Image (cartoon, each protein chain N blue to C red):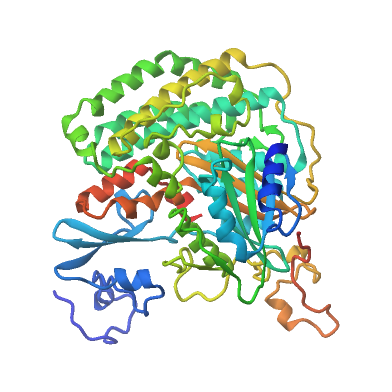
Length: 409
Length: 183
């Protein structure tokens, strides 16, 4: 039976045909309002032989709910316009209306792949406002769990990137290793993904036997398992030839685009906040800041793999050098920092996570700016895509590794 | 705290800053007016003894009185973060020059500040709302935008601000929920 086009004919909401009366599935890319800026007017004016296609907001390769309007000529991308805000929750406003402890809980769902880093930046900022000294053991635990989280995040990056390019195996292999780390962190934090483990003045709890035994088991095979996993892609000619030279960003452009983290280091700049602006106990730890000169998608992938090796090195040092002692500074329940401003930035798996907190002397932050690297890094896709193929948009986006929870805040 | 940075900034921008250079923890702060922003940023970015090439963050701030735009910069010449505060933007028409001529990547951050605070960045050629829908008219992160459930701090004690419209006659006058301001 075909649906008839008589609006208002079906009075009953139970009628199964009622849904078919709506015109669905027609994509109208041009917004129904006059262009707000000159850039929008320019983008939504079609040239000769050009057309729009829409990717997202619910497309598996957009890593969340990102919508991208592509202007294409044939198979070539002419321009693109990312449309954000589908996941916007107004976290900064929520944090202004929560007290200092509660604000940390709001921040970690932003970055649901590496939550510990999203907690870390506000925690340091609040500690600066309060002039708290964090016990050294707590700092070591933060570094240890943070680096585990970085490994986990980079492993997910490989899986997703391969998945976006049509390879299913790396994500399945990656999940084996990721699950080990997730269970390990769950043993110490009590949560699998949104840990809420870092507290102002330390961490929530000391390392326990369950965590240590899982960590020991993982460390015994982490390197060999990682190398085995990397052979999947590093020796895959299709992958390597597709990624080489794609979406290249040189170092000056990378700085101009405010890139940070692995995306910046893949362009040849050794900018790592763990060394460039040290925090926690990183000055005492021995690791290399890896860089790559090419700045293309392959470099961004290989750089993250090198970072996993460095992270394993750091974890190993933490285990050997971790001092005994308390894991939490003595602080009152109700925190009222003196009026002032504090900025804290840390090096996360996607770049610079930062928090800019302003205190007005009450128990709630007056303003809490959350800087997310995914948001800034994602802009580069608009810079490098023109001239490339439609299918490469997905590859370039995957190599920049945005997390939409952080992009949309 | 980097005392030499303070001396350098005082020497170079002494007449442009609207207050003394402040330092706390690992942060150095200068305040300027919106008219001097382009000149100061270009100097900070280009001059070889300053070399602030990395724009770490761009944030809007509502102090409760007026609006500010806050830039955080990083340089390899100092161990401090440099915070540049563009101070004293009026609430009804805040205007700041854009820094996209130096950092193209500031474009989205400026769009965010526009979306959340209504600050107009002159020279940003794509200044439209980025998170909120296009037909949205208010600016959510301003202090005069109330959340429904932040009334616990309000003088009406638990009465939601929407309900305060229908307050009894002897209720205290409706004031901003957050009465504090920062400098």
